Length: 218
Image (cartoon, rainbow, N blue to C red; front, side):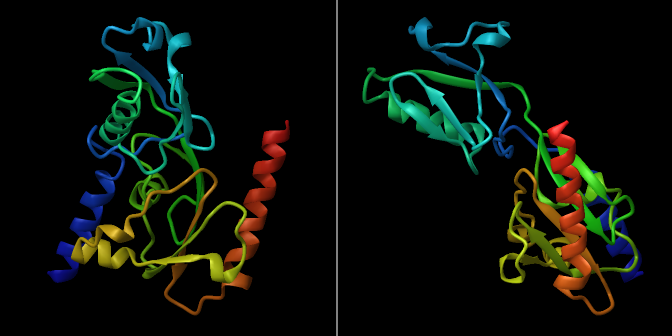
């Protein structure tokens, strides 16, 4: 019975993995924003005009008049709005700022190893570990949920891999394990047997990154 309950819990969490509230959404490169500064049309996006939208750059930063660049990395829309208003207050009196995402950016990640559909996925709305596993149709019965490895794009050394414990998230609600993924990240679910980073994971990463570079060069 305990195993059945855990299985049902896992399926429920994975089914909800791609659903994020506006409050929880972490901003992503490619997001297009309609920013309104009340009383200052010259700094505001025009409703319905996509070409006046502010766009988050691939490096996670956004350029805005008067204040220059703002880093959106790890920020929710509310966090970003508060910071923008604070920075504008150095130039404007009590600026009234509103920010709405009119088009979501996507984060491309690789999900490999003990998942039902290994491959590259474009995540929207939410870009966390569980979203990536859900996009890959969940983990297999052989997955070692206590040994999930995250490798950031370009980092292929053993000491640079981050070990995550999916089991702690599923059974203890340890949200620190459900990390936000960045563009090009590779998530690898190991099997219950022995695991070697260099022989089991590194060839997968190298092959996928090579494919990705060839694809982007076309």
